[in-house]
Length: 245
Ligand SMILES: Nc1ncnc2c1ncn2[C@@H]1O[C@H](COP(=O)(O)OP(=O)(O)OP(=O)(O)O)[C@@H](O)[C@H]1O
Image (cartoon, rainbow, N blue to C red):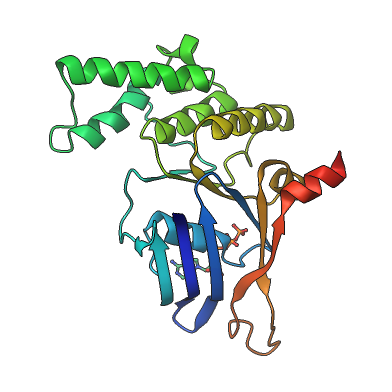
């Protein structure tokens, strides 16, 4: 079963055409990275996949069904800025997502359900290397640790699709490298799909199984908003990785 299918998607804000004729499909387990010039519409496309923006035209499907019109736990997102709650410690930052998933009305779990939530949170904190910092507060964490916590917050809800918008853009190069290894490791164990926006071409090829290049095919010098971007190249990066070895 396909995870995402986009058929002839267009997106405009008023007269400003951002995306046009975007055709795309991906399966679970694929890791797609999106690259392209600044302002070409990568984040807009990601927001459509999250469900907080709708295409102006065209059809979008999630698991072969009409795309949900709002975010859900099936689709997690990690931004460049951290999504941690400063008044909660590490473990509670992870558990709160499960509490709202399983008890949307009260936002609290009790008894057996709470015990299971703690177990799931501990498991994911082990996977992202934060288990020993589970009682620390966000202000006691480094940037890399906070971003690992943001990833844990998304993954604990077992999303089918993980959306990443330049998640490592604010981190030091050494820390980003560690985060790459972490993400590849978790992705190889859990069969979710990933769509990640990045400005870093080497990161795109290192992490992605597919690198999607967004850009405009046509440019009108007098009316720059007249044409939108589309996917001008869809590269099987496993072949490129083979060449790089
Ligand atoms: N809500 C909005 N209303 C009007 N215009 C918008 C809105 N959101 C985005 N845009 C415009 O859409 C265009 C694409 O923005 P987007 O953030 O998707 O690009 P991007 O490729 O992710 O850019 P960058 O690489 O710089 O982050 C920009 O011109 C932006 O100003």
